[in-house]
Image 1 (tube, rainbow, N blue to C red):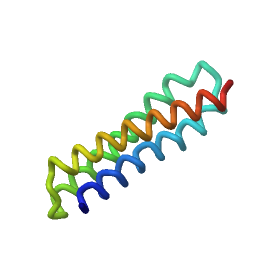
Image 2 (cartoon, rainbow, N blue to C red):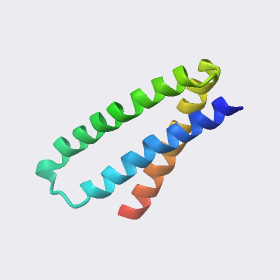
Image 3 (cartoon, rainbow, N blue to C red):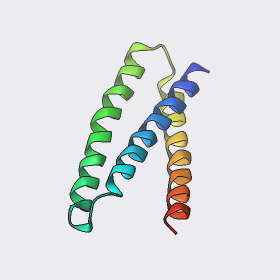
Image 4 (spheres, rainbow, N blue to C red):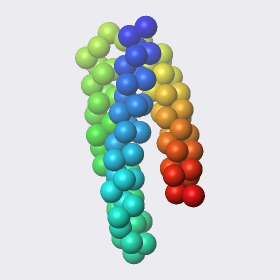
Length: 90
């Protein structure tokens, strides 16, 4: 059960980082958008990957269940964020 919770929290954290970066990117013009967006993706990857590895190594969770929970929660939160941003921008 802890594996599901940790995967859910890590997925939420990853999308939260993306939400913060997206809020910052709204202020940039189109010239810098791609560079800033790519940097945000790289930053998110460099933060989430070590956290993912640490949670698998340091906790006694089932790795497959943890990974499954992380992927599902990440997809769920990403879709929710995309819908929220599209409604807000229109």
